Amino acid sequence: MQLTLYVHAAVMPFGDSHAMRLALITDAWEPQTNGVVSTLRHTCRELEARGVEVLRVTPQGFPSVPCPSYPELRLSMPPRGHLDRLLGDFRPDALHIATEGTLGLAARNWCLRNRRRFSTAYHTQFPEYVRARWPIPLGVSYSYLRWFHGAASATMVSTPSMREVLAQRGFRRLRHWGRGVDTELFRPQPRMDDIPVFTCLGRVAVEKNVEAFLALDLPGRKEVIGDGPARIDLQRRYPDAVFHGTLRGEALARQLAHASVLVFPSRTDTFGLVMLEAMACGVPVAAYPVTGPVDVITQGATGVMDTDLRVAALAALALDRDAVHAHALTRSWRASALEFLGNLVPAQAALRARVRRGRQAAAAS
Image (cartoon, rainbow, N blue to C red):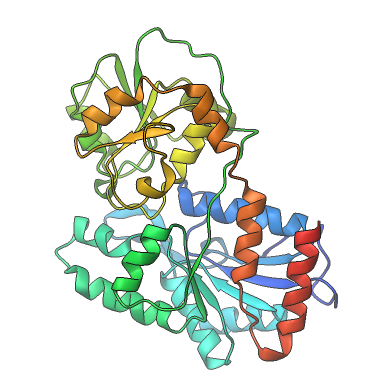
């Protein structure tokens, strides 16, 4: 079996004594399209631009099987010896395990066997997602996640409200890691419609609550950008809505900028990166007042939150798009990446100086 290694060619090689080496292990990676992948991709780009050598350990390098009920997601089956050699040869100064799947679990086991400290991140409300698909109690899923993250020296969370939720459930050593937005790609553009266009952007799956958006009585037109296991059924039952499927890059930014309002119906997101992307386009957001939106939306300025999603969507139409765009300009991926870097822990005590120098060099660049 051939392993696919993702190490930025422009950065110093493995043996260089000056570059800080970070091993980033994630079950979520391209070609998946979601907030986790986008966050990790931008973080890697920013860190590499500042001299950090990043080894991406992703499902693309290992055999995998489709996730039950969600075949678009692949579960890696990493042979122990291959992962051992990969991480051992790279000799990371810091290790970050981004996800709690099979690849993340294998990396966690490697760290514990080799007495390496590591950090983790809480990107997804996994228990709520699981309960939406199978009758598994929340307590069971949270017990697994407490066990998984409990071995980490730091667990990064994206918002203060999410940090509070996890602390109440017994998670420890929590550190804040905010998100950014690409304001060069996501920007205001001329709208092509004279009627209101309400847009939902994200994975079309039961846990994203897309049907709550489609069922709203709203003027104008509803559009859905994204794909997922629920799309075929929802497209059949809501024929008046426009389903664009997965869009990327400029095509995504252009379609999003044409929206009058981004309607974010999810009740289970830890953050909701698409809300920042919409704001960068000058598009206000309508959402429920739940974890994620309460930390991203400035009520009455960048969006409207209400327990009645229709009320929120109609009220958001009246917001100043220039003010919405201006708010998004304060959120950069550079700042997010530097916060991430500050949260990393040295894999061994002897590496503290190297990690400290890596942080200082990145902050100065």
